[in-house]
Structures are given as C-alpha cells and as structure tokens.
Length: 154
Image (cartoon, rainbow, N blue to C red; front, side):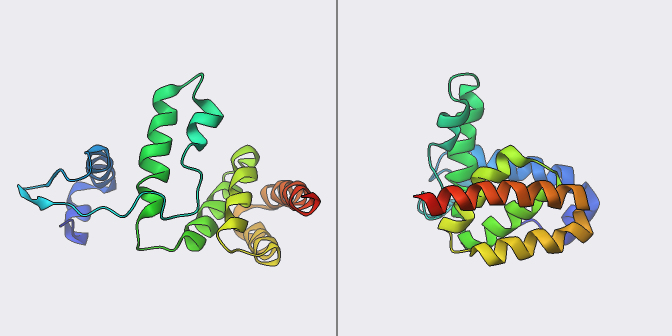
C-alpha cells in the first residue's frame, strides 16, 4: 500500500508512475508483491463513452485512443472512490482552469449525463472565475451555452 510517507520520500512523480504502470496491467494480474489478483471495478460503471478515444483520435493516434478508452474511461472513471457525478465536476473544473474548450465541450455533455444540472455547471463556472481566471470562465460560459442549446434542441 502506498502511504503518505512513501509519497513524501519518493515524490509524487514516482507515485504517478507506479499508479500508471499498475493501470496498464491486465485485469486479474497479481498484486504487487505476489498477492492475490487486484479486484477491478466493472468496466463501464461510470456513464462515459467507452469508445470516445477511438471516435476522437483513433485514426491519427490509435495507441492514445486505446489508452484513453481502456485506462482513462475503462479503469479510472470506473473506480468506486468517486461517483461519476463527482468525477465529472472535477474534470470540468480542471478543463475550465486549463482553458481547454474543446475537451470541456464533451465533458459538459458527460457531466449532464452523470447528473449535474445546468445550474450547477454554471455555478461551477462562476466560482472558478475567481480561481482559474476570468477569461477561462468566460470561454467556459460560451462553451456551456453551445452545449446546453444543443441539448435543448434535441
């Protein structure tokens, strides 16, 4: 088990590398140290597109698409420690803070599917204006308008 002391002594980069390496192991692989196979959450537990990577970049970056689908959506999003709704809010907040409108567009749709309301997402954008910067929030509000208008038209 990775402890807080381990992270302090070895740095977060080593923890990230260890975690990523573990994520790439096939389901049912022995746990580190030869223990019992690690239990994995059922794939697709979160309401996320399991082929999003293939759709977005499969033709140009097939390995990145495969890792996105298998590791990010198939494993990370399926972990039980955060509900899909909470993962969506965290992801939307990160994308707003990094001013990534293209990725924000799809994650706002996913956030709605995962139970976040339009009002909650707009409130998150407003809140983040003071932490991520006004330009990022204004960009996010424009993207949200597009997504919500598109959703209402369906």
